[in-house]
Length: 204
Image (tube, rainbow, N blue to C red):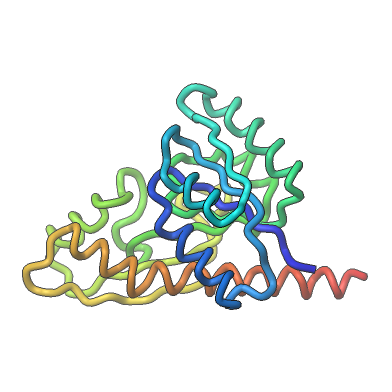
């Protein structure tokens, strides 16, 4: 049975689109995206989901507050019978209580080679600006499991990306997405879906 995936988003949804492309090309044979949840109003990722025929809802975290948001999110996940949560450009922090209720079932992608350029304040373009300011020659992306310890979680996959002379934060961001994020995230999602499917078979 296919593992049911929920993708949490905050913005344009480029990583979400990469997941849809992977699913539609057969690269996530053990999983299926069944729900997209945006924590911000007006996120284009919601339109991407609808264009692929996937249910999408907006739960504005700023209006709902942390507790209200997580209660509404939990209800959506339960109704959709979700097995795995993917944070794909999701900029809100989930509480330790919420994360602990989904052990080893929340996966996140970060646009650096963790432990470099991660933690509070390191998201989006800020990560790439920091890498350029530090003068490093190589950056990349990391897919990791999320646990209740801030910045904690087992690393699943990493991929290095070269920083080129003349790079701006914007050009570097696009290269990291194209060469690392859009490659790693579908691979990690399939890896986890297959693992969950195997565990289910063993439990029967």
